[in-house]
Amino acid sequence: MPDSTLITHIGELVTNDGDAGSFAAMADAALVIAEGRVAWTGPASQAPAADDAVDAGGRAVLPGFVDSHAHLVFAGERSAEFAARMAGRPYQAGGILTTVAATRAAADDALRANLARLAAEMARQGTTTLECKSGYGLTVADEARGLALAAEVTPEVTYLGAHVVPPEFTGDPAGYVDLVCGPMLAACAPHARWIDVFCETGAFGADAAAAILAAGRSAGLGARIHANQLGPGPGVRVAAEAGAASADHCTYLTDADVEALVSAQVVATLLPGAEFGTRHPYPDARRLLDAGATVALATDCNPGSSYTSSMPFCIALAVRDMGMTTQEAVWSATAGGARALRRSDVGHLGVGARADLILLDAPSHTYLAYRPGVPLIAAVWQAGRLVAGSVTL
Ligand SMILES: [Zn+2]
Image 1 (spheres, helix red, strand yellow):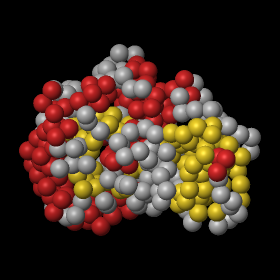
Image 2 (cartoon, rainbow, N blue to C red):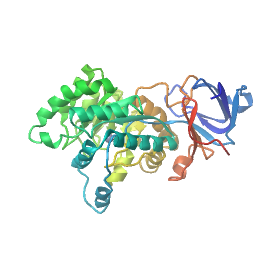
Image 3 (cartoon, rainbow, N blue to C red):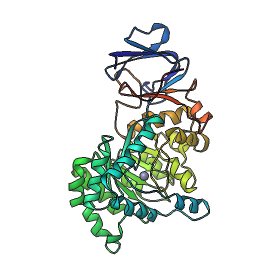
Image 4 (cartoon, rainbow, N blue to C red):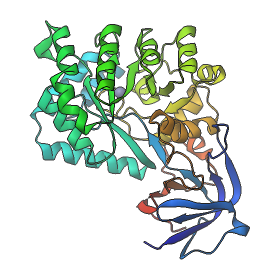
């Protein structure tokens, strides 16, 4: 790798480096990468020399996507369930147990290979930071194993022992919460940065969710939550009270929920792949943005409700069906995701940021929604290293 690389003739350089926490871009731009970081951005006509040069040919350059919500440690697939759902059967949280059984039965190497396949698939689609949850093991050993495997591909590892109550505890859900907060947490915390809970009818209620997040915080883990996905509920309130970094899904919100997200500065992470995959109504991003909430977009990649790894797909859905402008959707998929993970080094291309960037085969970010389903990611750099695609015109 050369010491410094100049990318020039960038038609649109999305930097997100304004101080208002909103989309920022410049035309006819250049960018210099040095030592894995953004060293310079500005007009192409004023670009400094570098050891190596890449001609973007008028195409757009964006920050790499930050996918702040994914479930990648699993075995098996559930395409038959998806097909049945599309034929009219409703989605129920219990489908998770199908994947739990397959995951428990899988060898480490099988889980590792599936995880590597999905992480590579994400990289090819422009994702340079990903979060990965456990939650398909639901025993002390299986959860700890899942988190250790996730930590091989990302530092943003989330302990989700509280995904659903496993069949062994059907008659004793309180006993399972004790396990999640006790021996399972002790085994999992060393591998994780975050703790998460699925707060939903059929999964965990408000008191259990609050207890689980509090236990995680005592073990040094930051809080995030699956909230208000399938109907109105207490999840967002629990998130605000726990000081969670993010409340994820946020599909069914009261006015009080929206106010709680804003006042407690909890990022609302919207996961439109889940609404697509369950044929539910999409969350109303416009309402959240107009109220002053910080919105992130993520894939929720998992084999049940949302088996997409594509941030461009989520951007297109958000623009088409959730009231977001193209600029807002791209910000939410980059800087918004970074905020959901409390990261300041990714999601933008200000000087000093990690050099995570995407070269689009298009002149502007708008094409991500304007040309949905088209593979527009030409090249991807992570920390200054080309990890996918090529820079050839
Ligand atoms: Zn999820």
